[in-house]
Length: 149
Ligand SMILES: [Zn+2]
Figure 1 (tube, rainbow, N blue to C red):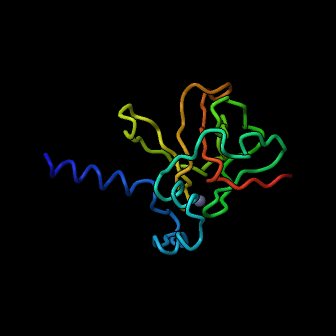
Figure 2: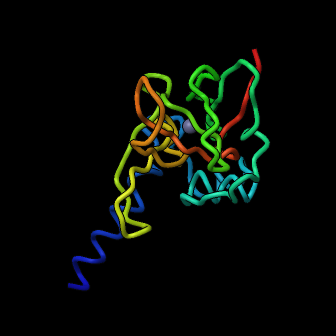
């Protein structure tokens, strides 16, 4: 069993942090130089910021939310909604911008999602969001950069 456990653990660590684009296959050191320690923790180590800590939580202007790791456009302000959870929340992502995987960090399986280009962890997606999708993308504010229209 210890052997199986090891395999499971290592594949889990790899899934969300590997970039799909050659340009964004950076080493740990390269990412550390590029990001603040807080952003590194979220994007590269699947960390979670404190609820209600991000100014983007209350961002209501029109614009686009970009990946803080590689600047890929992930969400439009048109899909943002106030979920009351303390994290910026969206009911849809920009097509092709994110990929998902299941994680078991809280024992109950959750669907983790990350930037499809640099592999940076963004948040978790749940099935209790508003129509038309019914999805709730619960995103770390530090993993995003907002640019108003
Ligand atoms: Zn990215």
